[in-house]
Each structure stands twice: as C-alpha cells, then as structure tokens.
Image (cartoon, rainbow, N blue to C red):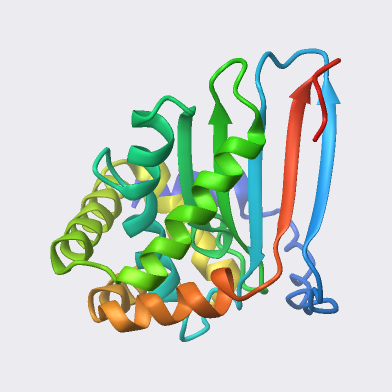
Length: 225
C-alpha cells in the first residue's frame, strides 16, 4: 500500500498522455531484391544484414518464424553458427523476426545479421547464409534440431522474466503493441505447437521465395562488390 501511495503522490497529478497512434500500415510489397552498400571510417571489418518482409506480431505465421529463427541461429550447434562462426567466416551470426524482439504490431522484417572476420568480404557470408536457407528448405528440419530450438526459446523466455526490468519491458511492450500484456505467454504456447512442416512453410514463403534487402557495411576505403 505504501508503494502505491508513493506512486500516487509522485505521479498521480500528471496528465495522461495522448492516445497511441494506430499501427503503421504496410507499404508497397517488394517486387524485387535490393542491395545497399555503405562505408564507414570507424569499422574494421565488413558487416552483413539480410532482411525479408514478415507479417506482424499477431499473425498466425509469427510463431513458426520465431521457431525457425531459433533453428537457424540459437546455440553453437545451429546451422548458421556452424557455417559462419565455426568455419571462420564471421564472429557473430543471428537470425530473428523483428516483431518478437521489438514488440512491433505492424509487419516488419526477418533479419539475418553477420559480423565478418577482419579481411573476409561480406559476399562470402551472404553466400553462406543463403546456402543454409536453401539446404534447410531442401533437406528439412531434423526432430532433434526442432526440439533443441524450442528448448532454447523456453530457456530464453524464462530467463528473460527473472528481472523486474525485463518483465516490465515485456508486459509493457506487448500491452502497447497488441493490447495484451500476457501475449508473451500465448506466443510461447503457440511456438510449442509449431510442427517442422510449418517452420519449413514459412521458410519457403517469407525467405527462400521472397525478395530481400541486402545491406553491407565496409571499412572506409574497402573494396565494394
């Protein structure tokens, strides 16, 4: 009670803020892949970002996209880690849908992010990432890889709720994004019900068969492709 009283004394007289704006509508879908290259004097190695359109936080395909991202890059046994980091191409590789990481209600992006080893061109990582996606699409997801990815998501979900700050961030983020403070629980439950064929379906629909944006950052004076 004393805490509520203190909060009321400190903040009770503040006027409410303006209503949040409606989610931003999706713009015109990409019809072709695009490529952007930039140089910066304060970077010492290439970085690569690949981006594909995704449908939104509450879309029925989002749980499968989250599980797919864990299959691709969660843990040292994941295919992106093995192909990029273990083989010495880069120091970091991650894949994730922005909606679930940043609590975005509107359609956003599925990102593959790679930091290259010094002297290794971004094109080598780009080729490796696309090879991983194509191989997964053709060969399928072994059951043990699906279970490993699901366990990684469970651990990350529960670990993320151990601090009051992270709990508040999740509850507040989902409240703003989709008016559901417990959406994180519902999303985890939905992810647990995703089957391998559903993860492969979103892989083909949103990544393998879709146009993408490629962004490469190089050291100032580096060779552009």
